[in-house]
Image (cartoon, rainbow, N blue to C red):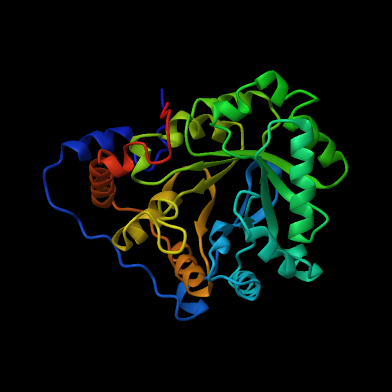
Length: 330
């Protein structure tokens, strides 16, 4: 039986799917004119890691955009710290993002304040060590706080479980990196094939999961019930990505329309057990907008729950969203 903790239950989704009525108005996003207007950024414990992190994380893939320079990245990171945001999520796959982050992180005071996350795209021992060393070099740091197995739902890369979790696989390399103090925690990230993540959890070595969860793909991929319901009981740190749908293009916007911004952030924050909502930003304006939305979060009313579910169900059936992050959905 599923937990009754869920803020937006399956029953409400079914009711909402059958609803014919009009839209209930959702609240307007808070303005980020000043920090006092938004309130303090909530600080949380990232599951069994015990690490204290901000409720909002910065999705650093957007730093790869051509218009964003290293100076812009440093200014954004420093402003994030001013706002109480310390969680930075990046990856080798994010092009020049890590290189642009390096100058800011070379400042020991900045580095000591942030919770720095990167990823390995390689299932092998040698490949993971190569990826980790390259990340440390480009990020200009001597350690990272968390390394994810990147896109673990892709069985074409991660399908040899015995190898991946053995001494000659990615986990073998990350175990050694932990002993050497280069890595504190290990996670798995991904946006498709939810059932693959039970393999990662079964290993007993995964501390954090980062998955694609938003009010639309909840009806398709449903990491919330298929994976996170169990992960909560294991006290894993739960991190949401694709909160706004992900990048629309290389240099502009999010996959979701601006009209969905507030409900998208509120939906993510309503998920039971969520630690961090990672939101992509490429500069201070986007950072402050996201911080305001997170810091001013208010739970949905029952009427708002049903409207969000109805709208999400409608959008999830559209060609754009049916397999938004690839197959399989199960």
